[in-house]
Length: 224
Image (tube, rainbow, N blue to C red; front, top):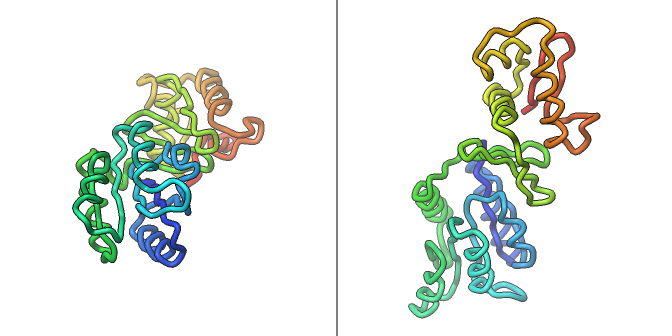
């Protein structure tokens, strides 16, 4: 499972280096070259990193909008500006402020501190096709629409069980007994019905599922 970072930086050289470094450290990075669309892109993210000097809206304005939309989203400001006034302006809404130039290890350390402070870790989210799953919060986000997929308790239990055995083929008996806590009776259609409703909510094309795969004669699996 991977923590998703929103990174807003218009300098291509700096952005390429930072994005590549963070990706190598195990993060999923959504890199924007401006603040346009930042609020929508931030929906599945656990932390935002943004430069002050951006084309169009500056980083202060973008950061304030992000904080209003997602009050719990940690924000790390980056800037070549070193004046105390700039830092104080950024820290009115941001959780940390790092001046350029900086070492990648320092940026990574600041990110880890903010994630730990906000109860996040590199195991908090999982991206599957168009979905971002926050298992700890029992939330599933459709990254294409930025909307939450509303699952019933049983639907999330089934999906969560398959995610805990990612890539493995799980039998109908295993799934049923784990979720319902009782023995599976051959011919019982309860699980099949729940899987059908689950696919209607999760799959782009429920008739041709790409997330929850049926393994004929055995059961189901979610591919990694």
